Image 1 (tube, rainbow, N blue to C red):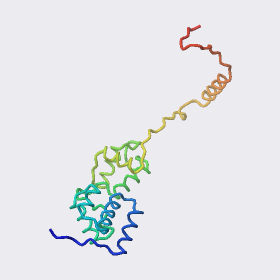
Image 2: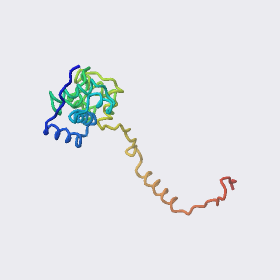
Image 3: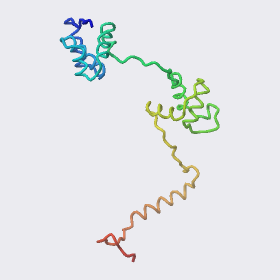
Length: 188
């Protein structure tokens, strides 16, 4: 087994110490600590034991540090299916929520998650699961609220004023209560 030279220049040591003190990403700090420990003369097995990782991880972190500097310490992008909800998709959602559904040619007056999904699918060609869309909308700060049912415009204004006056009069009359010394009482 050949030994690797893990010596660091003073500038690299200072850079690693700065990362360890100031970076908010836990994984980057852990990896910078591992490289700093190697630079101080510890072996890969000692570092891996101290940080509870494999020696292969420690060697990989050091190699990435040498090749890419700080960028090599950050988590790498994961391979996988690209996101369906792109910025263009969210722009369609934003525009839809800011406009009346009737102005867009729909027969309904309230947006639901399913209706938003169907509208966005027509505009972008991308169909998301309604539950996933609801979850993503919640993460983006959207809040679903029920519309308030207000029938004031259909009520008789004069009768409403009379009812309000009668309620105020009832509020001003003194209360006649039963004194309670127990939780059990008998109706008078």
